[in-house]
Image 1 (cartoon, rainbow, N blue to C red):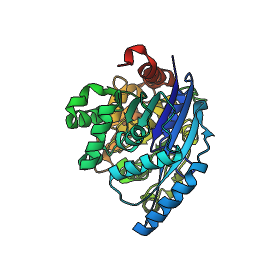
Image 2: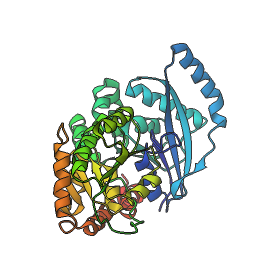
Image 3: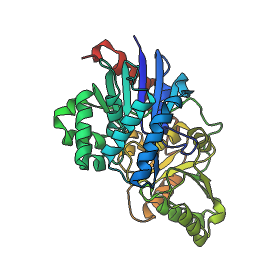
Image 4: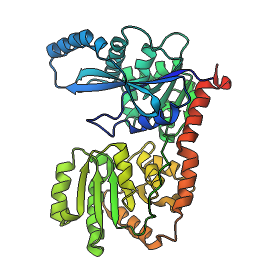
Length: 398
């Protein structure tokens, strides 16, 4: 039998940051139906350059105003969303960020515990510790780890201690990739038995209107930052376009490289073929996937790589680096889904990957088989079943 569920997360899509926490939103949409009630508490970091005096005054004002400003709004899956601002100065240690989130959530709750039998936190320290600090006795804690910066949190003594506390208290600790599991199992071997694999849910419900007929319209979705390999993507695009003038590239996302990428596109003579779409909502990004021909994702590291699976769900082939998550998510269907390439500090691997994919397209792949396989692994129904089984199955109870 299902009961009330609460989610505590440091990330959730907002007007200002429509991409951040899209996987938490997808998890909510997949798992909220069928529960008695479902509330998402988004502990949203509001970061600014603050003096200690300013920080103290803001904290005082927050404690006075927050209890009257926590009316829930409706989000996906029929769930309620409560946004909890967490004011803080820049560059705080991770454990202090978690402590402030826990305190802000307590203020937002009026000092009362979270009214849910099941509390599911995202990110062990930044979501798990605030959840643990605000649970009522007898509630059950579950955690999903997504953070690409897990190693940095564990490197801080207080961060390591926070993870130890959360791992000790939770019933299951889900991880979205083998590398995250290895880091946690190495750091906390006594809790290795609690670590379980789980996938981020992907919506496979809406197919594209027409199958991909060429590989002319390239798409990138993600942060315009070094880790995503987007600079080398632009260089590779320019090389390929010299031989195929019909190629175009759409970049969805924002980041510190936005200005430099625009300048470099002009220097390479491809500015007229490159579109900077900016940050879009997950729905808008998925719509663009159905209008483009190939996703190029040359990231340096991904714990899971949601966007790669979303592209396959949209019926488009992918060119993606072997950067952690994609090798696992595409296991057994690598050539059906597209082309995996090596991580290199130049554009050569991307160019070669595109040429290899182009030379065997479309007969040398099976996009529909890839889509079916991934739907069985990562579709909403499959992931919802995993969560509900952990939360509500009598066999899962201690």
